[in-house]
Amino acid sequence: MFAGIVAHDLKRPISVMRGFTELALEHLADQRVEEEDLSHLKRVLAASGQMSRLIDDLLTYATARDAALTLLDVDVTRLVRQIIDDHLAAVEETEPVPQVYLGALPPVRGNPPLLRQLFDNLIGNAIKYTPAGQAARVDITGEPAGSGWVRITVADRGIGIPPGEHEAIFTGFHRAASTYTGTGLGLAICQRVVERHGGTITACDNPGGGSRFTFTLPAAPGEKEQHG
Image (cartoon, rainbow, N blue to C red):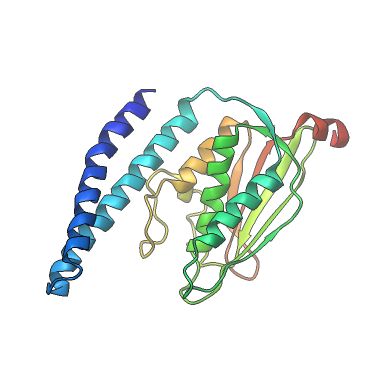
């Protein structure tokens, strides 16, 4: 609750700043203004957007640790399909279209908002951390993993993880690739979400290039009976 209030209070002045900056850019669009001067306003707009995303990530990070979890049976295949569609819809026309393979994922018992954040971060990273001009390739698969558990893997063909940083990337504010934008909290949030559900998450190199993230989540009751 406190984190939500603080986040709201921090985002309010940022929203005002973004609004007036957008108005200024719109007003100057049809006037003879040096591009360099316009670029200053565009940098303000970009910086305010980054700050807003950081506040959102900090709120999610706090919520993933402290919020009471309402657990439901979740159709993970449907949830992930929605997330994939959202990411594909956001791809610019000039960018290569990501190739995403989604296997049948067993249903799990979890908190839908946190699980959405988990998959959104992992899929978003898999698409973002791809060399420029190359179409992202993401494979999302799952299987039962012993009594009462499901194992899910998100693998990509991107830039990979620097040697020796496979555990450090889950640390808050850790940035493995400084040339890409981000707050450095995405994977820390993923770890916190998985651990709140009693599972574990690991990262390793994907054979042939890229990264592979594997994590466990509680199986939905029907899965426990079927595969237990």
